Image 1 (cartoon, one colour):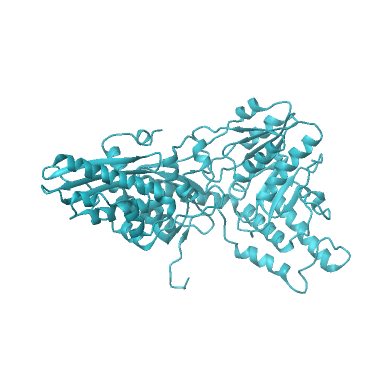
Image 2: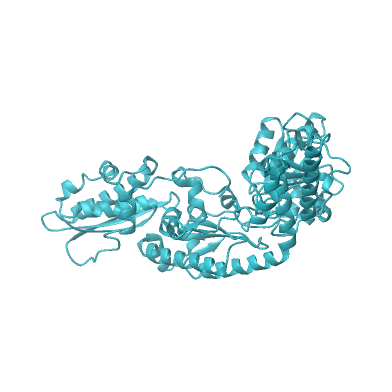
Length: 408
Length: 133
């Protein structure tokens, strides 16, 4: 893209975030040919010791964001790997020792959790996927009812990546006190936007991504309760790095980047959270005035995500009408001709056709009011052109409720 | 949005042109000519198409109008069909369908089921108009 072209407005921060220049600056020395390439396991010389110290500093920075002991931080290659290590590792370890084979999670979880649970089912585990209410919430009471003597893991996300709906992690943690089941929290979407407190939540396992909070791709972390030591069946075997949980030479530059990103996120959390909440509210009000719009997800919501379904127009038509001016995540993009709408919205009871007209707007560090106003204006223009062409819109104009039009 | 890898439906130049400059969208007045109306598709399937066709006394298509809840290819197909049918004798107009749409618009094969909805609505409206003759 040339300097004179206007870049698309990026509103897909929940998918990934740009690398913060401050993070890049922190990473660069660790890709240096002379001083920054050491293997942190090679403690016999200065190169290795410097790299090891950098990794330990990053471990402390990550732990700082989580309000947790640094010793619990295990670096992985991604949040997906961290989730797989938590879910597969915990349940396989328990099953191998006859401690139980039941897992509780939710239908609205990220594919990484759902796919790991499906794998466990193939290995003989029993998985309960809790259904959310129409607002996308899982009530801690549902977990209590599903708990059994053989439950070994409860895995729930702090913030839903599609709707921004938040779970009450403190209540879930309290609920599991005294039960053998471990609590795993996928905090990929909430960390850096909302407070995370392993101490207050009584969490055993917590997974985290760097690239969702302005760090590099290719690195994630799993916090594993260090005391009393929690045992997991590792996924990767080798040199015993990361306390034996995850073998493989550590990617120092990536880890340093993740540490820096976490430290910045922690320092800026309160102000950024307020700023993003105000922007999201501006966006919500603007979109609500565009036509038959339904917002998916009940409060409390994370500050940076807004999920909206645009009634009476097809999602692909809306996205095409918006053109290349905006980077957004659309329900129609997931389904296209395959007819598979978002599993999250479907679990919440949103009709498939309406789910396909849903768009996730996610804001971030470089979002501003001007960008929000631009997307609101573009959506307004798109709906003004497409609605009169839609037979559904004319039914709505004739007094039929949107829910009836969609057969909900 | 759900973290899975997906591929988008291909939209050719003609589809995009027809989608952005859709012709014959709307409804026809019911007070002259031989008018047939029909709809096809379901909201649940993601495609609903309504067509109106007006014939003159010789059975020639004089006007068409459509409304659609659907993807860009669906709207482009409605627009193209309406353009292509005007001026044709009804028997000849009834021959227009999915093969002609696919040839004219370079459609992604994955939207064929949607094109069948367009064809159903169009042909049913034409048949309804013929019955008025």
